[in-house]
Image (cartoon, rainbow, N blue to C red; front, side, top):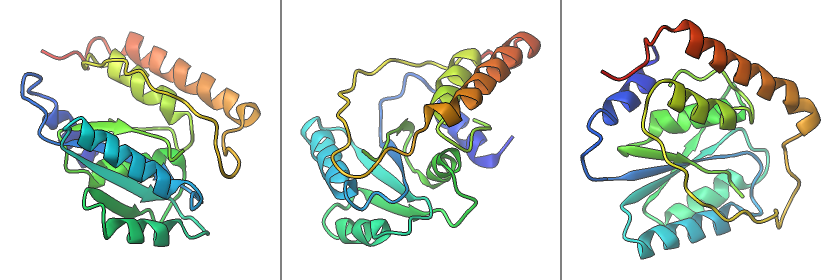
Length: 185
């Protein structure tokens, strides 16, 4: 098991402890047009709700000014923790890098606008399914989705369909062949 995944699991052993720090992990690739707005609005909302937090934005090999925007934001948003993923790149790998860089005792993965297999967007299926199969507590949090204001989506259903199916089948097989190895005692 990866050391950072084991560390995350240890953080969640005491389910009764109050939240000390929420880590919001945001993978970002070429998001110079929207990253400042995303971070500023998220930080404001968490402050208004009195949620102790850090915002870990992982620049996943951007070729635009995403990194420079993050460095500028850090000057007035002290909860921002910008991290560069030098490679290999991919959505899942950026999230993994964010988990390894976080300090909080709870984590949320958020778009810029555990042992992980998914180096792409199929991580959004892998994380919740593995959480459920391995017996961890989980909850559904309502969100508001808004269409992108800047740039184009990097998600291609045509490309990702088989990857989503693979992850669903993999986790299903894990559930039925693990013989309860992941169930909390």
